[in-house]
Image (cartoon, rainbow, N blue to C red; front, side, top):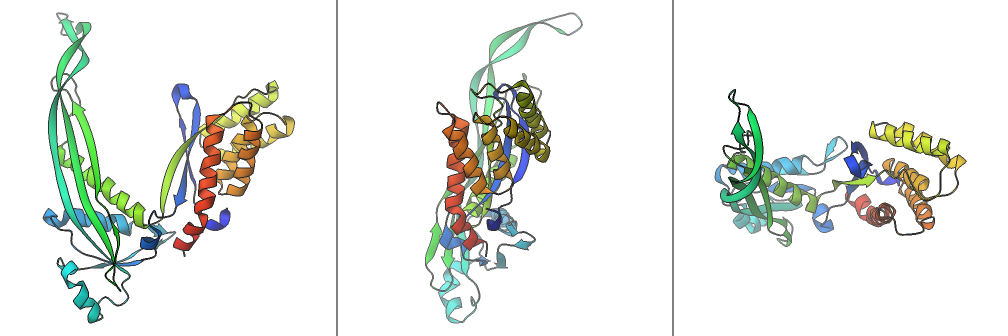
Length: 324
């Protein structure tokens, strides 16, 4: 549906033995629809946030949500003790025009190391010039480093003081290294915590604002319909163009192939991807349903595509409301 202002980006990747695939990104509504209607937010300082690092990451995540060129949220700075001040501020009209107040507590922010033993190929015999003569599998001591960040954000309705959203969000980012065996430098614990913190803020953002989700769909180039050689070449060439980032050329080849081959599920499936990539979900659904009708057995890619488009169409009303 073009009217729902879906922005779909195409990132084409090759997936080795699994064949070629296309990655689509689609705009999804916020998980919490009530929270999403609060567009002017006062952001209070997070408790237990040494140096205000988490608070800065929170504001950065929220300010990064945009409707085209416009920010989705209007953010207002607030005092550290805003939580206790809400009733009085509301009575004095200080929160007039503010839809919601973002509060929260950092519950964990640290990193830790764990020792482990792993199998690695190491040199067990060296030549006189220092080059390795023989490699063998050996047990080596390694370090598993984890950065963990957890916080409990709360979104409070300014007019009533009612808590609209509250949930603990925790993220862990890991890195492993084997000293003396691997040449790579270990990632610092602070770096891992920073990445975990960014992921946690993104999860909160996705709860209260429209956001993009990405999914990978395989490019089916074979089915059980015995494609003529010319048709098969068009299908394969189209997949090659898609993998090179030229979806327009790919779709043109697949449409021409459809005109010469009216059976099989691969071509209608591929044309469904074309429709989905351009935001025409109704046409994508029609194509995927045709592909499904032509299968003689379940084809996971087709089943997944049908479920994906149906879910997107079901969420369209909520997204339209949130994007106003």
